[in-house]
Length: 207
Image (cartoon, rainbow, N blue to C red; front, side):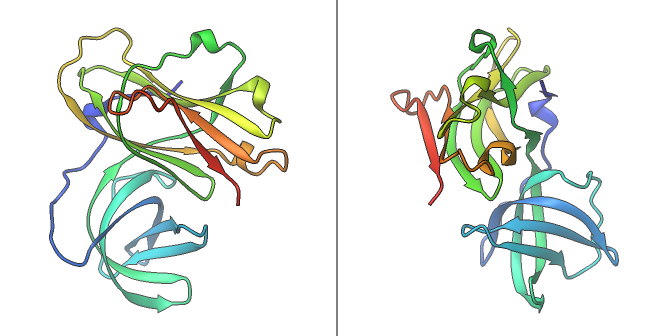
């Protein structure tokens, strides 16, 4: 399982006003000293975002993040120039699986949104701060792997640590291992949300 520090998973967010966007993107390294990001849009089309000025990020290629930016027009086909304002790291992981659901721990979260872009399942939530490592993952019930509805569970395990205040946490999980299967028509995400406790899961279905 992925062990993370929630307290150290983001950069300072700047609250700007104007013509800006927030999108979940993948950091794709640099092109001529300018930071490059891959964006999957709502129709699953892909777009490259490229900063219009020199920009260096101390991040690994493949890191998912919530990017705050201003679109500055197209540079060439498939490439959008941007002014990057700030970003917040997301927990970045691939879908895991288990044959024993009794091992799945789902400590509560305050869900803000959950959405799919391409082969990624993205989660915006709040979790209780502990100042210690915790487990955050998306786990599939292996018995549903080749079913039309694949059951997945948002694992959140604070490992019994003392919890304090709520704070933001973003996560992005690669689910291509099941989303690409011809047998899969729906990915069902189970979670423990204290905002809407009556909603036990969300479905993401192929059109």
